[in-house]
Length: 278
Image 1 (cartoon, rainbow, N blue to C red):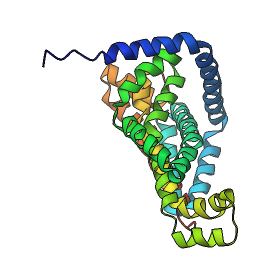
Image 2 (tube, rainbow, N blue to C red):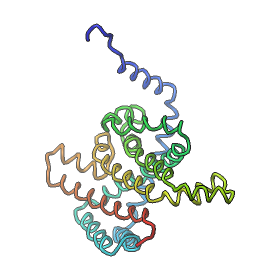
Image 3 (tube, rainbow, N blue to C red):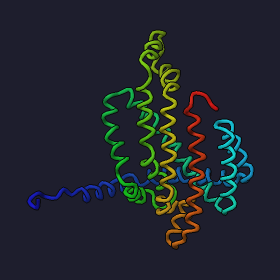
Image 4 (tube, rainbow, N blue to C red):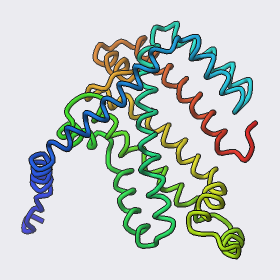
């Protein structure tokens, strides 16, 4: 195949990145400052909460929304994290996950609704989501670092790209799965587009949408260790430090803390997708 000229995708990509750096440098810096202040403020706020009070709040939420077993697991798990001396990294990780999931919902929910309502938008968005989900996560880090330097901001951007597709896909699926009878009933009463969306379609699609948000949270947590490679702190930083030192013990402790947080968040968010809270 030597007779076929090589398509210079790498050169085109580098030129596109250089162009964006030159033309949009100030915009990237402003956005980076905004996002950094948001995440760091959230981290500081969580760290300021006394561990005992935080554990009590989580236990009450878990008991009310799920059951007493998950509440007990939350208490024991969070106490174990405090005992291992990983409380501050855990709060830093939790803040990054909350920030990433917040933006995934803010951006993903409208795109999912648009994809459900417009076949043209669906045809455009679907291949983009395929690209986002299949491209290796490490590839996201290169342009993220180029535009936003090292630290928490490129970590959040890479997490957004990696974790947003489930929110868009399942919002699209949930709205399309609303029974035709309900839509016809709403139209027969003269409901407007927004009334149909807010009072009928979104409530009916809530379990499916929450499943997408649940997946988004799990994917965000899975990006924590990878994000540590570009300067993000938290539990991922602890794991990455343990890898560099070949310290299996501390690496296992940080991994265990991630598992505890993942289970608690998973069970609580699953309850929001149920028809009735337990």
